[in-house]
Image 1 (cartoon, helix red, strand yellow):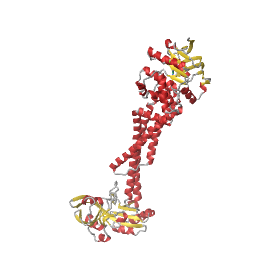
Image 2: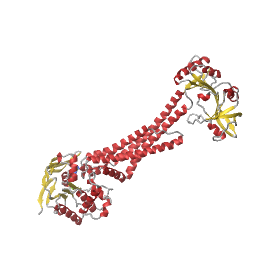
Image 3: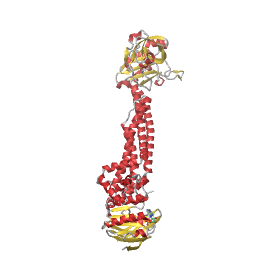
Image 4: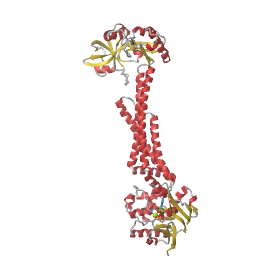
Length: 403
Length: 227
Ligand SMILES: Nc1ncnc2c1ncn2[C@@H]1O[C@H](COP(=O)(O)OP(=O)(O)O)[C@@H](O)[C@H]1O
Ligand SMILES: [Mg+2]
């Protein structure tokens, strides 16, 4: 009996290869697109979150804000309002772990005839702690080198690759930043992570060196600090705000000449952007699932006439209704399962292929597999089985005469 | 064994209703060979569908072997059609894109019989119906000639060795010679104890039967025995 059921199902499906093939194709496309697009959306979300986490932990960043000159806003980050004295004062607040002031600038860098344009960060040794920087070759500069404005530089791995060739050891060699010679003393470990600005394409030099030889002034444009504990983030942020307002003699906090951000804010802003992206992708995928579903419906419904006569004949020769129902259920199930299986594999392959272009790791979610599979199985079974069930309830003559 | 009492069948199609059969009563005993004759549209096929438990009368009673058909469940009707009745349709109704063998074995589907046994039964049935050429058995039904299709349809009706064989114009599309071969086969079946009821509109074909029932406009006109 089971043999008959399987045999009839396979014979019936292979008897009309084009119809079965197109029905399966509809299911495959629907399921594959849901799986691939959701996987890519999820992967993008993960990669953004992890690249933000790689910046450091319990991090609070203070940047110059827009300065008002005679009531006219000068634009964010344009002002030179933060000083080393501010940084030192912040270090006295309880709950603050490490303080790392920095200046940044983009300069032309040359070495051995190669050149690149790279973000140059002038900072202090504590920057290593604050921003989770670790060393691959050599060492970071010391407090002593900061005090003496030593012309030493630490390269990010990408910068090293650009200037000295992949995986070369540049320690002891010379680079020219803005035409000034610096001695290379180390290379940082690769952090990976893309999307925002790469953490690997950077040059680190002592803060004072950057101020004297590159920027030409004593301002700083970033203070990175860490809170000693995650739970202290909010209170530290508040205290820093109050301290800086007092030091800069600003009474109204809405006129603050600095901005302060903590890592949690950045993570949540970024994830809200990427989750919108995921929702958008899912919506597109949902549309293709519906289109695939309509394809299945169409296939199943257009064959109803033919199938109704067949059902009428089967009933006329005395096959019981239950077997007729079972056979059509088996057919619809087999179609959706074959389509679903191929669709899952196709979606998986598609997400790997697509993500290799986008340089993110796709995350295939079981929810999307179950959802896509469930929807197309439901459509396939309802539209494949329901008309058959209806036909099986007709009397044989009615079914045989059906047009 | 077949007993009809005042059978009526009315088809309703929207506003139009057609009275195809209007009050037919008769009895057919086991082992009879009956021809139902009448002009086209006189209700012969409708009556035959009711006899074959394929359709239900609008009013009247039909009982088979003493059992009232209208009181049977759907599954009982299916079993009855499969085991007791062999039906040859006017339109033959073979499955397209399906081999001769599979068409003939269709009534055995989902039964306990092993495949070997089913094939044996199908071959025997096909030979009995006059389709000797085994090469044809694996052809698709839509690749056969009219006469061959006819015999496959008869073979399918015979496969379960049913007590009653009902045939709706089984010689409708056949030349005289082939018609006679088919009618001889029915006579042979009748001699072996099968009850046979067939429909025709040709008096010459009806003469092969032992009893002729003439219908016109849904009622019996004449019921005569051939001696
Ligand atoms: N399913 C149906 N719906 C409506 N009218 C039908 C149907 N089947 C048969 N008829 C009508 O009933 C009458 C008898 O048909 P039928 O039994 O096929 O006659 P016969 O087989 O003697 O030619 C005809 O007028 C036919 O048009
Ligand atoms: Mg007819």
